[in-house]
Amino acid sequence: MIGLTIKQLRYFDALARHLHFGRAAEASSISQPALSLQIKELEQLAGAPLIERSSRNLRLTGVGEDFVLKAREVLVAVDELEDLMRASKGPLSGRFRLGVIPTVAPYLLPATITALSARFPEIDLELRESVTKSLVADLLDSRLDAAIVALPISEPALREFALFQEDFVLVRPLQDAAKPVPSPDMLRSMRLLLLEEGHCFRDQALSFCEITKTQPRQLMEGSSLSTLVQMVGAGMGVTLIPDMAVPLETRSANVSVVRFPHPRPTRTIGMVWRKSNPLADQLMQVGAIVRGVGTRETDRTTKPASGNQSRG
Image (cartoon, rainbow, N blue to C red; front, side, top):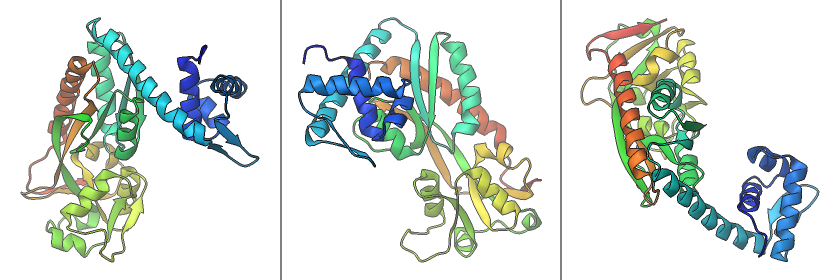
């Protein structure tokens, strides 16, 4: 197909993901009429319709489904070629797309952005906050350069780089501050507030409490750690949050925070990227910087194991 451009492939990839011209145009930073024109030209080059249009929705044609798979392979190869060229220039520069899970982003990103900008003055950070499954998919499709997630991921195509470990703490109503620290058995009998399905932190909390997904149980859900803590302050139950979240999430809540005795529930935070990414050396440098930031943040929030810590 003479005249085919990388931009056209990116526009079609966006349209195939969103199946909506308006959202695809917004994601591609282009006007909707311009996107429609590019897709029309691409279909003319392909010699077949790639999108089935109706008054209600869009869907890919059979040719379109095959086309987008090949287009994504080309886009990954192009991105890796660009990374190879960037790697040959030395320090990390230009666009760097970093994904972060929601239970890490608000607490780690501010100091991380400052540290990365100081170390790599020419870097142009693009950040995305989403759940692990979505970030891994974006990594594999070369829409992200790296992601900060809870390990392990166990995806053969990705390199895992451990950053730091952090404890989980129990958040309960302030009036319960003097009570003994509950065991996992005791937690199973309490009203436990958890994040919605899809968050890895939810699964980690359930694992510590030894609650399986098949057990009939009334669990209350929230969309963020902030929501969960505020629900605890209102007397609706108890919750677990990562240690790093304590200063931000409990400063205005009528709650008590307590650390568990050993063996404490913990998680390992790490950075992952494609093994084929030519920027491996630079990514290791980024990981080392994030590790330093995370270690400082967790050390700052760590309190002695004995005694309760109140907020409110």
